[in-house]
Image (cartoon, rainbow, N blue to C red; front, side, top):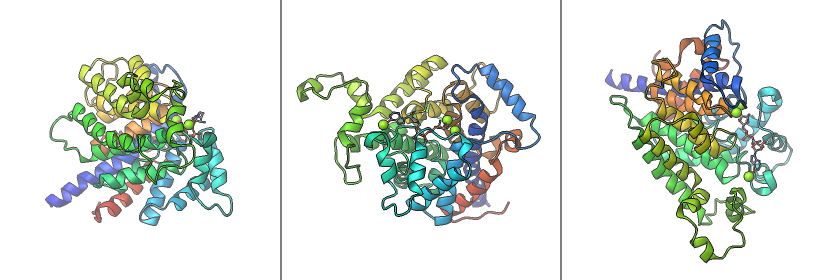
Length: 388
Ligand code: R7I
Ligand code: MG
Ligand code: MG
Ligand code: MG
């Protein structure tokens, strides 16, 4: 029975991960694109959600795509790029009004063309061959961390592959890797003591140094061949150092080269400092970590929301840390559904389904489906099926 209870705790965390991701998307959708989002407005909206009697609070593309990721892993009992790609595209055609990103739609149409040889080709063509740096790969990645539970290499590899179906840009797929690693790490944490938030960031930094370091200067065969390696890295940064000599480049500040070559590591270091300091304003988070549609400007904010909200937050009067995480993530403004869905996935993986407020489970479209997907992924990942 001790084994059974260990399994039950883990299953609760699988369920919490996908259900809180749905809740974050559904509730966050109300404020997407708003800046600023006063926390009182979010609290008022949450009150409204809590009073709903049916499934009035609709999910958006974030959940629609996460459901396809989960279904594909479950049906194929593993990662199959073509199956997942087809599900994304068909789901878009079935319900195009879910608020998809402006450019990813082009990929969906191409994925449905007859005779497509390489499923990654349409994503590679985005933005003149640089690929999209949007957060669409990261927003839907949580089921991957559940499926690959316990195997960090598998989490990293499948997260990257699933993202590359639509987001061939390094920032796009590395954001998905970081989000998946955060969910993975949250699932592994013991809950006996308070979470050491700085250690959590350090563990992510250690992994992301390999992810970002391993590809920046190298030309691995899995890396994109066309217009990717050098161009994509400099193409996105503000500076135009294309004509500089190696010497000039070498004399640049170490910090700014880190920002260009290892942008996620740079943000994790800022996050580490924020968490050590404690009293960080939302303006600082928005300014230094970001809150927009780029993966680089939203995945760090989501992870920070989870870690920051392990403790009480002055203007969010709830003892439920998962609820606090989602409310806080939304109050950062900007890409609120996406930041809240990613923060929710991490928080749910840590706190478990018991912490997802029952009124949210009732009001949010897709919340019960999320529990079902979580149970199926749990069986796949652990080989266990446990009685209700
Ligand atoms: O990343 P993606 O799936 O969008 C996800 C977002 C989430 O907020 C969802 O909730 C939904 O609202 O959309 O979709 P993409 O179309 O790949 O990227 C989103 C947007 O980022 C694009 O429409 C562009 O405006 C921008 N973008 C870029 N702009 C210039 N150059 C992404 N990559 C680039 C780029 O390389
Ligand atoms: Mg959305
Ligand atoms: Mg780009
Ligand atoms: Mg969004």
